[in-house]
Every structure is written in C-alpha cells, then in structure tokens.
Length: 319
Image 1 (cartoon, rainbow, N blue to C red):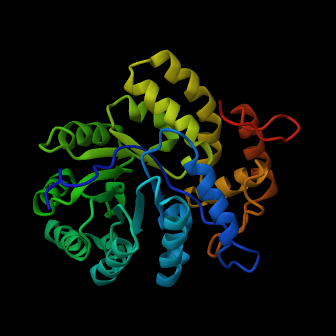
Image 2: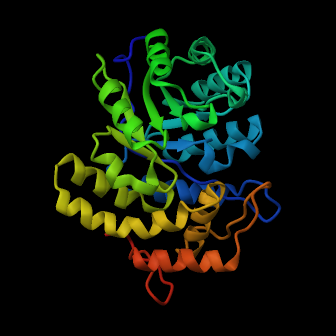
C-alpha cells in the first residue's frame, strides 16, 4: 500500500478518556456518553482510543477489543477511529494491530516498544513497524517520544521507517524540543507524499501549531475539543489575533492538566469532566491514584478561567 492510498491523518483528533466504575471495571454507559459528547464537536478529523488517555497500560487485550467495539458502535459511522498499538514486543503489537483492523479502526497509533528505553538501533525500529504494518493494512501514526528517554526516533531513523514502511503517513510528535519539532515538520511534510506532523505538545499548543503542523492529536481534546478546532482553524487561516484570543482560554487548562507529575494529566482531565457534569466519577486504575483535593480545586479554577465553568460550578459550552 502506498501512503496516498488511504486516509491521511491530519486535523484535530481528540484522544478520549475511559471511565471506570468504583470497582475499576469499564463504565460502558459513561464511555458511550463521553464518545458521543466529544464526537458531537464539529470539525474533528477522527477519534483516538486505546492510548495513554484511556489508560491502555492497565487494559487487557480483551478490554481494548471491547473499547473498540463500543467506539465503533457509537461513532464509527461518523469519524475514523485511531487505535493505539501499545505493546512491549512486536509480536503483541502485530496482534493488537490485526484486532484493530478487524474491528473497523481507520488508522493505528504505534507506541515505541518498552525495551527501547535501554537504547535502539534503526533496524529495530524499522522491524517493529514492518511487523505492525504486515498485520494490518491501515495508515500508521508513529508516536514520537522525546529523544532523551531513548524511545524517540532520531530524524534519520524516522526517515528510514517511512521509506521502509509506506503505511506510516503521520507522526504524533511529542519530541519536547521546539527546534526538533520544527525540523520534523519541515522535513516530513515536504516529503512526496507528505507525512503529517500531528502535534501533541498541548502544553504549548499555539506555539506548536504556528510552526505548520498538519494537525493535533491530544488527550486534552477529551475536554476542550471545540477550542482546539477553533484554534487550529484560526492558525490555518493565518488569523493570529483570533488564535491568541482562543489560546487565552486554552492556557489555564494547559497549565492545570500538564503539570508535574505528567503521569496525572488524564487523571486531571477526568476530574475536569466530573466538574462539568460529563462523567459521574474520576476513577483511575493503579498505579494511578486520585489526585489531592487541592489540585482538584486548582483544576476548578482553571475551568472557570477558561469559561468552561461559571463561578457556581455550572458547565458552559466552549463558544
């Protein structure tokens, strides 16, 4: 398959959350409602599941399969579904990819395998993507981690992956370096056919988008997808004044969600949706635990500053 044969990931792609009951089983009715709520935002390109935002590390293979089935049932007819491929090894990654394709996913988001924390060689990365691509004839988004943790791919390695595996049509860029981020945008989006750079630098989203990203893929879209759409459209139209106005509303949420420790980012988003009346509880699976009350209050203040809650705690639609 060539890179121009299927859907090219671009635009605004929220990564949804996964609600749990108090016993930490999946809360299917709340998940369905959450999917419908996020998917109702006009201007989205796709929805992402079975990724960090849905606590994929704590979900079994069968649970991931069920999450996909629910998503397909609720919104599969309206939006492409990007399915995460999170696995320690390439065999399991290929098994997940095959399941995702059979379940109706429109693209795969491939995480770097865990062993790369000890280092990697380019041929290892290429082989991992070949195994995934061989199991599912779908567009692939490569999740680009920071290079400092050894799971990110040097640009030369990314280019080798793209050359060897034409199904790789985009990257989800979390390189955490503005200079490398811009270099990747310029290089990958100039290829023929282009490979989209989807930013996930949600803590500095405006600055990232103005560098020319073809889209964004972000867990905070589970809360502020409508603001993200407006910001992306304003940047695409070179309307900096409007983009800055929208960013003033996004900024408080970014400060609240993306603070140390970063592992709690989606934990915080669940708390935000509870305050907005969109989730019944903010249960998370271990090793995550509920955040302190002082931090919950900080999130409440951020939502008020963003215009998503009034001072009485009533939710507002991001207009």
